Amino acid sequence: MSRDVQGRGPLYRLYTSRLRRHLDPESVPHHVAMMIDGNRRWARQLGYDTPAEGHRAGAAKMREFLGWCDELGIRVVSLYLLSSDNPVSYTHLRAHETKANL
Image 1 (cartoon, one colour):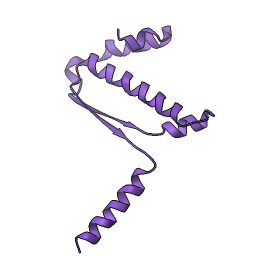
Image 2 (image 1 turned 180 degrees about the vertical axis):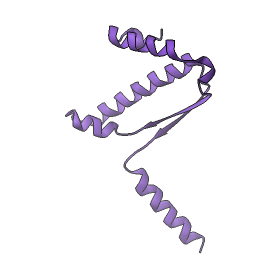
Image 3 (image 1 turned 120 degrees about the vertical axis):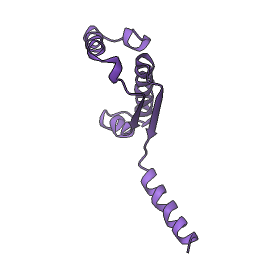
């Protein structure tokens, strides 16, 4: 059992062991992805003073996820980190690219 799960309560440990028993090693993918989004919103909804608490929680979940992938033998993991600033930045960059190509 991974280090991360050992510190969890008995119901979580029971849940994870049950999941592992039902996994078919032949059907485990070679590549998975995780989209990390909403940490700032999560922190705000729980009343934290700063979004940093949400970012720390997201980082902890990402480490847990990577541990699961390692235990299952998943060799390739893509992580997508999203921000409310990304869509604006992307649109702004595309507008500059379009003008540059004229």
